[in-house]
Length: 347
Image (cartoon, rainbow, N blue to C red; front, side, top):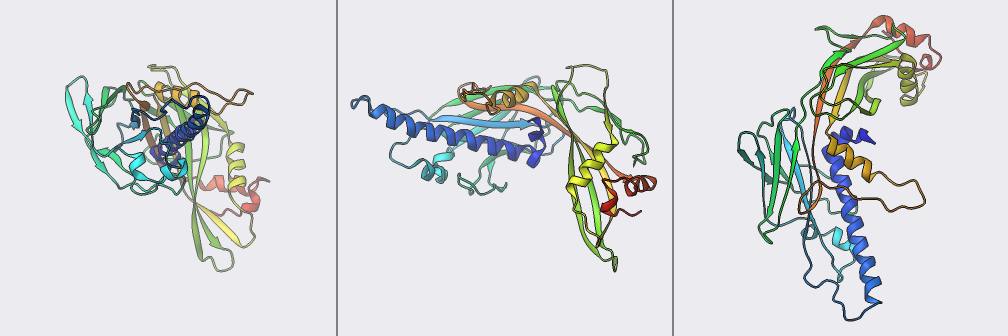
């Protein structure tokens, strides 16, 4: 499940995860109200309700922008849960002070509230989609403390995480003029994990131009993503390189499952790139705890490293290596392979 680090740019997935958590909280609240009211008519379920801050954020020292997602959760017996989910006032706190403290230097960064990232339609209100943003540089391999203060209630939540250091990429595409080749039996991926990294996803992005066979007219460019390595746990804080050897047949299977066979279409590789996603341990712990249960007992434990609230404050590090041209001789390998021959690749 670690592939979510790159899915939708990482942050948008956290928004989706956040929405699920809030929905469960609201629906659970509705169930509790019904159940408890049948037991004791004298209990005021929603008396002195407490606003709970739900915080999600991943610091990426290689990204130019950092976003923190902040929502609230509470009981409401007078409204339908789905109706509450569509009301932005039920999801966002009206006024908050959000800061990042670089612990080693004492530098304090104040984040601003923005409404600039589109959210997909769903159960929860699409607009506004308030986030807290900073463009201040975030240093690698350093501790940061997040502090959120609700100016309405005075509630304060805090969390600390160490940022990751970027990996040292050994292969592929290390040369100044890289070329992606299928000449060997294995595609070699090698890297020295970044400091504080706990696990890695590795993805290959392949862009392919499609043309009409009859008149060679351009049709479209296909942008394909191959999940090469998923949730690979590495030895922490080591200088030893990690080596993955991926059979080239796996790449051909990926192409065959991603592209339609059509005699009227011919294809040419545009370029290939590789993306590396490192994740901090608190991020991986969060994913592991929140994975769906496959047993009879569906109840799972809850993970949060937010003191005084709920959610996750962690770090990731995304690196893209490329772009690389596709070796012309490798096109011949695809043309003669039973899986990829029907895809009509040309040089």
